[in-house]
Image 1 (cartoon, helix red, strand yellow):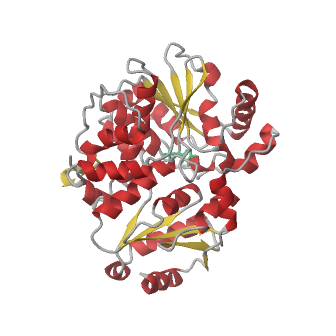
Image 2 (cartoon, helix red, strand yellow; image 1 turned 90 degrees about the vertical axis):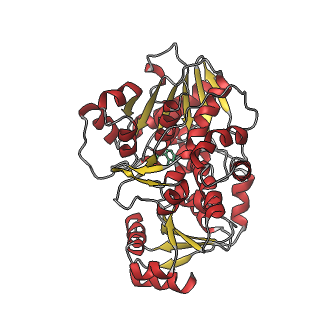
Image 3 (cartoon, protein in one colour; image 1 turned 135 degrees about the horizontal axis):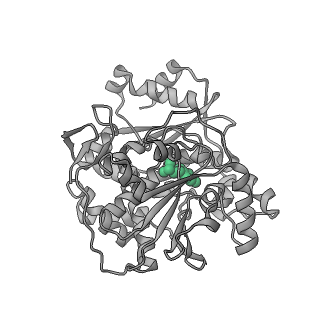
Length: 423
Ligand SMILES: *Cc1c(COP(=O)(O)O)cnc(C)c1O
């Protein structure tokens, strides 16, 4: 399978090229040039077997079946349970990876694909507001030939996020920037546009514009269907920010998997709701909420979704509904689900579950994606449910390790000389 840029159907590249280039040279995003047509009759027992069958058509130009098998076995080595909450209501727990959020699916797959296909010494730059950096640090930890540089804003991430960012292996260097997330992002952008630097250091990015992050996210939709049953026609409810998760689901549906529709749940950052209503939206500045991984004002994957539906708004509206939920409703939902089902959810998952009572389409099962473990947001959740949440051993053990970070003021000349000296 080839990939093309959204703007130019003649601009065809392989999976490997799309992975390393990140953004197409015309400035638009890469999309698959064709969609596989799955006809899965098998009932899968192991997640990695299913993942391998789903991902293979997307990568086979560069990765053979044996190589892919190994990548999938190593990447998806944690459980992905589908839990029944109530009649026709299910929760797909996507947070059992090492950094306790669904970002692990993409980061672990990306790390191993980069490692296999990379011929030169490679340095990956990531600016993070919290979750992505941890998943990337963990995913690339100890991966040969690849160095990772993560920039995070000092004192602006949660305690657990900081543990995950700073207790890292040798090939990961974490820079604690005395500034904001925007300062971190600016340093990364300046590095990418610095020709002299790029002639000396082989740089790439692991942020969500990379198509390599979307492909592994197709697999859990199909896993959930496989667990439920083949004839079911579920609605998936997706807590949404940059819409990468939703795009994975749409690719699953377009490849012949029976899915009724999607409910994209957003917090107060409601650009998707406005887009579906009006066919366009005004970019507003980002609103800070308690579901912070979904605080995105201008979701970059919307362009991919438009492309996949031939830029036809009615077709998009047939498949995707969207709601916007504010913080006070999110808090009420966390409490309600705890009281009614004795089940604790993170703020992102709660934004999704907020429609549980007025979901309308009762004859179809609804599968709610749980995108992060509640304990990642321990400080928010504990006062709401009035209970302590126990940390798992994998997190507890991080407290015993030495913090490793490089403190830096947000000045580009400092960042540049750091990169030139180290890589
Ligand atoms: C990143 C993230 C989201 C949003 O996912 P998108 O693919 O950006 O829409 C939702 N929940 C959690 C916990 C996240 O980390």
